[in-house]
Image (cartoon, rainbow, N blue to C red; front, side, top):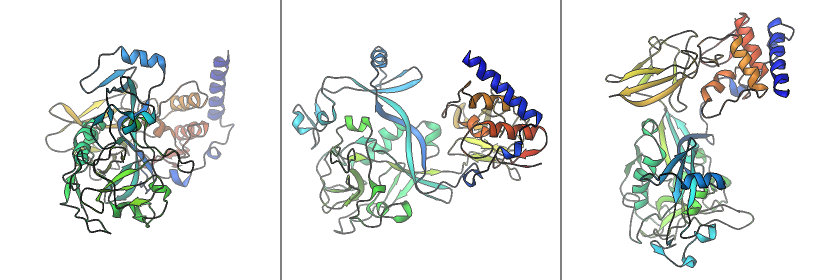
Length: 458
């Protein structure tokens, strides 16, 4: 009965909009933040890229289902549309490297993880904090501590170039966290490995890395959003670890003022070659004395993203926008059946489409393929088109009203293109104000700028 009432209200509201009883142009107030769809990512913004095991599974029913699955070679299973990592160990990770049967020499048991017990962790989108955005390059660092590992497996004189953490980040982590399309967005960065600024300890050779750690100078760079003083208890430098990192033996502060915070490695050496720098749980930068084989310190990967695709690009003279990071293509005219006039692929590549059930519109997938493999993938957005048919009409307005009344659900990840196409006033909400704008567009009172996603007088 309640569902039927909501449905009736949706129809009634749409009729009100269509009949002009409600002043449509008064429904929307354009926010300054929504003036353009592809914002200039600013320092401190959070984006997502890739997935990694993070949250511990606690649901008993799901745990039973996961335990019944056939384990992959990488220790993962897929269940109910989600991917999960199994963790099981018969010895603890010693704080000084290696393994131990004595829990007193490990942090894992302090975090509630014990030998001979199965734990499951869900792969979830990795959040990255923007450090800078310049020249089509986005410099980001993981918002959370994703793993707890030694800087180097053995206590020895090492540099960033030779340490085992660098190898792990650029191999195990890189291949676990990112699929082929995501890896194609990650630049090979020229990493400058400076000497310790206080003790002059050799930073070693510069390196070329996909993934790396921040240096002393970078973590004290105000342009990246950090306090410029190493001794400041900087909130921007503080970090907490995921459940998965804690299962690795991450040391977690119990201090009430810094509860849950943990230390994380920097790539710059400490006061001696067998020591490495870090940021502690206060947000203080340590430059002296943490042995490289110490395992309870966290890793916050950093990387640089190429925001400009060299594989699938807009055609000259076209208003088409290829948003490489978010995976969207927009700036298109409603009613088109291909991107022939809007975008192109590099020589040797092919462009393939996966239209929606509705047709060639919002949600259509576009792939740049090489040898039959998708190297880059995008979703089309026709602003105002939420049913995927490529047109903007009352059908779309009805769906938005239904969404506003909880009759249908759009998932933030799966339906990101639809949600972006629906928010025509840029306020971050999908509601009757947006439905009203669509009705105005259909009645030729407004038009939609398909590059910005904003409405304007016809």
